[in-house]
Length: 233
Image (cartoon, rainbow, N blue to C red; front, top):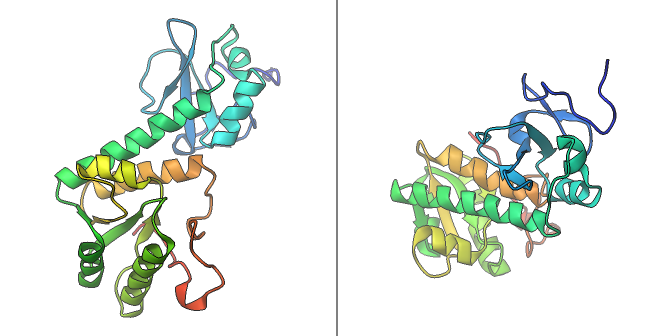
């Protein structure tokens, strides 16, 4: 017998996919966020997917979590009254940003991050940059110049790099242990891919589905300043 429309199967945490309680669509766990019901009866984000208890899953975008709160879907999915604050989506975003910031800090401690316009530009020219980290609140002119440096390197036969604008200058600064940081680069290394995944999760959460989409301040009509094609090697 199939589950009722407002319920989830008890074994829904098995197999390669999970069902979103908002859209009813199934996706790989990496594209979703798991939630459990805490001892106090509140919904708890389980970003590491390790907390005990029955979990429910939501597609990892802010709008879907907001829908779940508004429609009281957590109580339906857990089959009992579940406490969710009106600012629950903000709380989830805080955790996602913190996780991304912590991984940038880990990469920095491993010697895999360079910061500052001149140092990042030099690292791009020398090769080995896995991803360009752009502060969301950076000045448009500086961001355009850095992206242009990436494109020049690609035209000269260098490798392409991801362009990630998940964190603002304050968060980048906190991660790197210095004042506000606008330009940083993630170098190749064992921590780099995990770090990039956390940053991508923040971008996906905010609704940036197209990794090639220009960030705020870039001019998509300028042919000489088009965003570089991005992909993980």
